[in-house]
Structure formats: structure tokens, C-alpha cells
Image 1 (cartoon, rainbow, N blue to C red):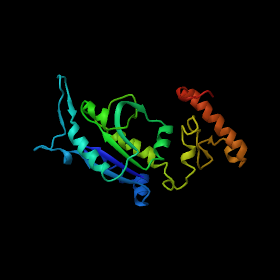
Image 2: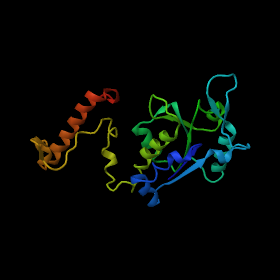
Image 3: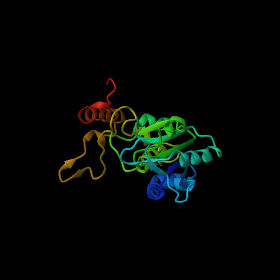
Length: 226
């Protein structure tokens, strides 16, 4: 898989991709992440990527020309399955959306800033808009990193235990059950006996019941007819 991220602040993306799982995924050759400085595609003396909005109003708007130049350059090199704009009013990032994107080959993530992008970008250049929550960030870089993380960890070979992603919260429409590790007793606080029994069927049933209980209590909004 290849993920290209377009941003006017590329240094904000240094850290998320230089450690842990995302770093190892790149080292294994399972994913290539390209970060593209939008200023390099600006055709003006000061390499500006924003301007005042027609019609007035507070805040600057990201210009269409640098964005179009960058996307056109990338598309000349390969075919993209999705060109995604990180937007507060896009579709919500969910586990099914991450699952779907993990099956793609090439993705572009466009990071917004200021009051957003020239509407013509949304009308003519992108194929999809995604939001990571009902709030506004200073820019789309953190959101793009979240999307990339959610997608990359699903790729075969990225996690040491490939079944781990299949038991994550939301994969089955429920949040994950409680988990415990050694010691089995600490300060009088004991691990549930069923988890120490070795009885796989009983353990599976316990996990399902706890997942359902926790979802009803903490995230009833994600229950799907259960």
C-alpha cells in the first residue's frame, strides 16, 4: 500500500510515522508513506498556499492551484483508489471505513487548514471526505495520521499477531472486553477465575458477555440491533 499525505506543515507528521508499528510497517516494505509539502507546488514568489476568501469573512482559505498541482503530479505517477480530504463535515471514521480503506492500494490524504480549502477542490479533485470526530483541529495533519494508523495496522504482516486486529474494539460492533495480565492477584484484586480456567468456550462466552455489557453501558450508540 502507498499513502501520500499533502500538507503545508510536513514536520507535524514526522513523529507519527517514525516510531512503533507505523515505522516497522514501512521498514518491512508493507506500506510507503509519502509526505508532500504543498508549498513546493505554489507558483508564487512567497510560496503561499492560502488567500483571502471571496465575499469577505474571517480566516484564510487554502488555494486550489497548489493543491491541483500536487494531486496532478501524484496522479501522473500512479493510479489512486481514493483522494481523501480530512474535513470536519466528512463521513465519520469508523472501523468499517478503516477496514475498507485497508483493502485499497494507493491513497491520497489532503490536510486542510484555516477555514478550509477552495470549494472547487472538493467539487473536482477529491473523491471522499473523512472526519475523525465532531470537533475542529488546527489542521488536518493529526487527523490524517489517525486515518493512516487505523488503516496501516490492518495490513497483513504489520502486527506480530495478525489475529489481534480482528479482536479490536468495534470490529464486531462491540467495544473490547476487559483484559488482565500477571500477577493473577494483586493487593487482593483477583483476575476473574474463568480467564484462568483454560476453558476456551467459557472464556469466549465471558468475553462476549462483558463486551456487550460494556458497550451497553459506555457506547450504546454503536449497538446494531444486539
